[in-house]
Length: 452
Image (cartoon, rainbow, N blue to C red):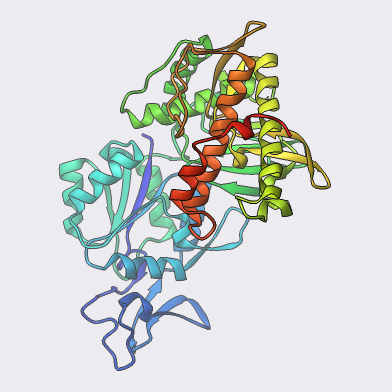
């Protein structure tokens, strides 16, 4: 059986003691917010006390950091629950306590959490939420608790429940016996070859970034590639991905409807197909995907690192600079369409890097090919393919089959870039530009459509 999530009650299971809102934060020097009364002992990193009453404390059980390290190494989603303690108090404790990450550097336990269901509530509702988020059946979830009453979620939902002693919490031996009892985990199955999650994954270098669904690393021993590793990949996901990939590879539209799992897998399938088409996918072949892929490392400088990007958005210097960047990005979009038959549909400045000659941008390179569709250049017009575009960013009219002359195509995308950029300005910094001024400004974009 596959373990798709491992969940812990926090009180008496992860730590000894209970974060009781009726008792904590009641001393003479107590802060109004209960969570502000939690303080990590300066000489003992596994002990938290109530600053208003030092007789109240919780202690992280000894093996918990090692267990969390192993769970993250196996890429099994991690969750914490509590029906007796406020979420803010639990979150603060999980922030103060640490575990060793994959590079054996101390990180807050809170940063390792995939599913946080701490706070008052009944476990049936809590585990129905976990089932939805983990795309899991009850028997694919392993739950550690000290409450015998938690066996109710086993009876009603089929969740695998391990009851532990409130004197020891979850020990390394208890954890490993549970894995052997219910399944080895590893993020999803014991298949062979690419069916085995992360089969053939190369050695990873420095962690470059992390999102909700994946992490990106430098390739160890090489500077020309990066490796993207999806979180919590499973054999079942691979099998469904191959079905979806076969459709998008053929150029036929695949509509996932409201199925969140299919939506997620469609984005992966499109990114693999697009990277393969533009010759930036290094390894493995899309059909051999097992939860990771190596792609070409794109060199360049983000536009926001240039000093002209810091000028006022209504100023001449900024507009001439950013317009030049947008037209170079447009050049890159057209080049890829004509060369490989793929249209990048999300080329805002976050997804483009540049070469600069002083204050002059001279070349643009595109990043992030998850939102892109097939497009054909027939010698006079650009013709969009029939891909189903799951995400259609604001201001786009990205319907299948639309045709554009080169001038229309440039106007379409440059106009979208300007609207996207200036909308972001008034959304994030009302002091720089108001929404009213921004909307008035966007009524006439003729100047932007021409190179200067």
